[in-house]
Each structure stands twice: as structure tokens, then as C-alpha cells.
Amino acid sequence: MDKNKSSDALDEIPTFNVDNIQNNTRIINYSRTFMSIIGGVIAGILGVNGLTGIVFYFLVMAITTAGLAAKTEFSVHSYFDSWNRIVFDGILGGLMSFVLFWTYPYSLMS
Image (cartoon, rainbow, N blue to C red; front, top):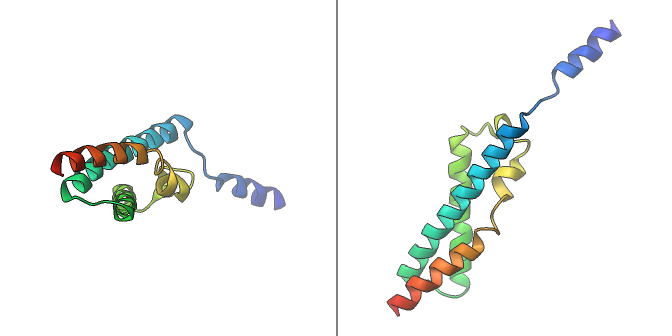
């Protein structure tokens, strides 16, 4: 009877396809970069400056995270190995794109 219990425990271990997780992570990075660019342009057009701009960036990233979680129907573990992938991956990577596209429209509007 102990043999059946141990084999049942092995059946419950989640397995992931590495190619699918890499593709999903790549999609997250593309989405975050795109939203960073759009957020930067909007912040520049609105004339947001200083610390308010950084807060605006993290607000855009929070909205992006919520959108990505909604896209997975909040069953993130079906597509990723942890919530950390969808919440934290790519947040700082998009910051440079945000700053670039934030300062250019801001300088044109001033």
C-alpha cells in the first residue's frame, strides 16, 4: 500500500515544458517593453517629471502585471513556474525604455 501512495505523490508533481515557459517569459518581456514605451510617451506628453514619473512607471507596470494575470485567467501556475515570473520579470528592464521615451516627448512639449 505504501508503494501506491508514493507513486500517487509523483503523479502530483507539476511538470513544465521548458520551451513554453521560455516563450511565455519572452512574451512578458516584450509586453513590458511595449508598455514602458507607451507609458513613457504618455508621461512625457502629460509633462510628468521627477519622482512622479518613476511612480507613474511603476503604476504602468502594475497595470501590465494585472493585465498579464488576467490574460492567464489568474491561473499563473498553468503557464509559469511561479508568480515571481509574472510579477517581477522585466520590470527594471523596461525602465530605460521608459526614461528614453519619457524625456523625448517631455523635451518637445517644454
